[in-house]
Image 1 (tube, rainbow, N blue to C red):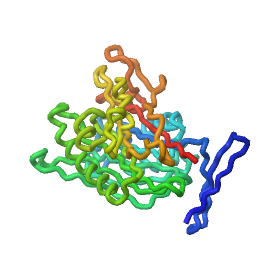
Image 2: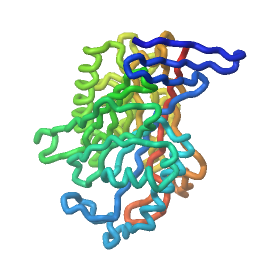
Image 3: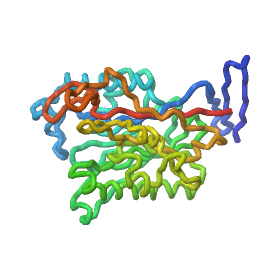
Image 4: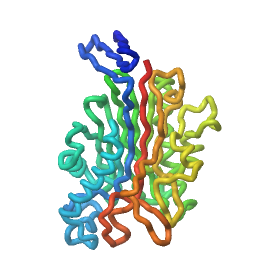
Length: 347
């Protein structure tokens, strides 16, 4: 049983203290503060060691990309500059990370070390060796359980094809609200949008099955889906297979809402392909987090973009300043822009 005490000081500051009788802990929730959930495709965050079981030879000092310790450390600090610009999110999903070791380096060797981040990561069967992960600030989020969702592809889709696992986390936010978080990196568009679409539709079915199961157990479950889907909000995999639409066209009975859909309608994007902006990095929430009656609401869907993150391509205009373009080393941040939403707690 939880007791809730509400304090109002001169109309300027409001907070809640939830007294957890079972665990005898008091958690202060600042109602003037928002809690950020972000996602960032960090573009090939590899260590410098060769893994004989993965195709990571290029990302070694003797590989064709000449990936060495200096470049690796520079990459960590470049990514930290971006995450600092995002105000160090409470939850931060990542994709294109090689292993848990690079995540530990990212936390311990940069400004992230000041924010006590924990890690949820699983090795996936991706042939290049890139995975998804979640970083979380331990003082705000407690992991209750986590798992990976392995995607099996039939030979009808493509024989021997592998992709990244979906990382699933069930956790307690502010010691009060149960959240279900899914971190994704869906199959690429290599081979063309149409030819590669069946792979992403296939992954969307796995995710849909997982969220449906949660909703059966709790129709008002708090779900947040983050990731590089390699599809945009209006594509079939997200809009129709997963069933994540956009307001005001979003049907009242739909359980998932794409927070980035309005930005997509404004021709905003996170990835510049030959001068065309694509919104491939999505944040999707359960619709109850949009309900004005809900105790906790999603707000401020944002593509984080600053001038120092960009490169002015003479042919394609401003694009994210990336680490590599083919074999050429540019020493930038990533070829994707990160995205985030904020959570607001109401009295």
